[in-house]
Amino acid sequence: MRILKYKTLLREEPEGGYTVLVPSLPGCITYGKDIKEALEMAKDAIEGYLLCLREHGEEIPTDAGMLEYDTYIEDYV
Image 1 (cartoon, rainbow, N blue to C red):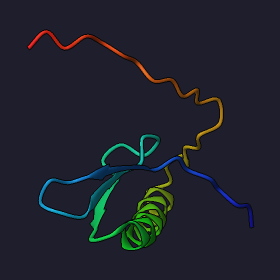
Image 2: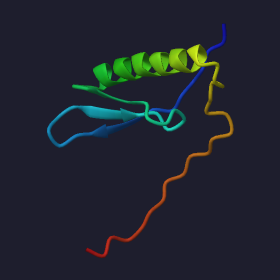
Image 3: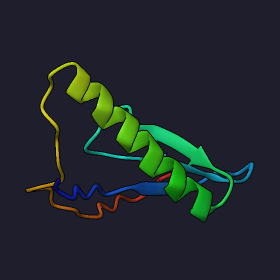
Image 4: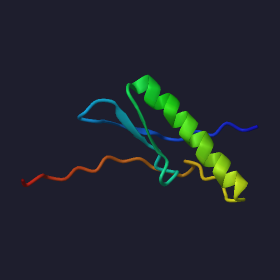
């Protein structure tokens, strides 16, 4: 068994809680009421996503070779 690592992005929501996005797994999005729950939900969502890919014989993507940058733009509004 190998250990897979995925970058997860948490976005604080105005109504409370956190939306979690997994950039390497398109459509893998979940939610938690706090950071701890959001990260637990992310792990569950990733495992389910990978299980579905395996069942369909699809390649398992990883974060290998992914570069991360922040991009800043001026807001003219």
